[in-house]
Length: 177
Image (tube, rainbow, N blue to C red; front, side, top):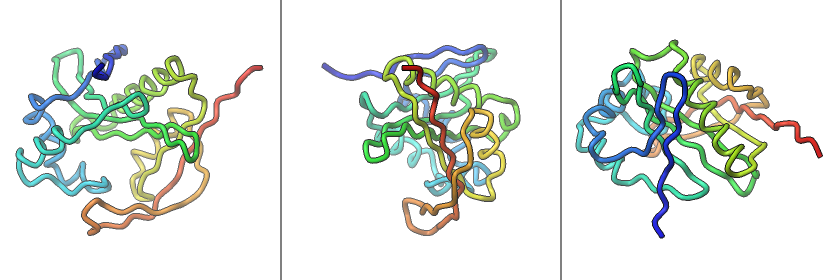
């Protein structure tokens, strides 16, 4: 049986699986160096690179990847993932959104929806996220989602050309026995 990513609805967004048909809309942020500045990927130089990324997405019961569609105009404005790390027993969230949609609360809304989805469907209680120290906006999203700064780390881009000192955020929900 093939696994499919569910659709999640929030007040202003629909979170749904990404497809190759999303390449043009996704290239609007993957090809924007302002958006890619702190990301693990390099700025996409062409829509072909975005198509390769979309074709490479692998999902499972422990890794969900969503496109963020704005309800008001049915526009794909970003994407995000939530994946389980068995070594730390945490669900890690990540996200990426068009520059013209920054500071509008969309990323927080989508991230909370992903977190609530795994809470409800996987009994998840532990979450984590990382961002570059300089990425203040991303850190703010993590804080709005209830995650707390727990230390610094480091991550590197896929191509090895960028290395970032990171801030690590975590959340452990209180569980009533």
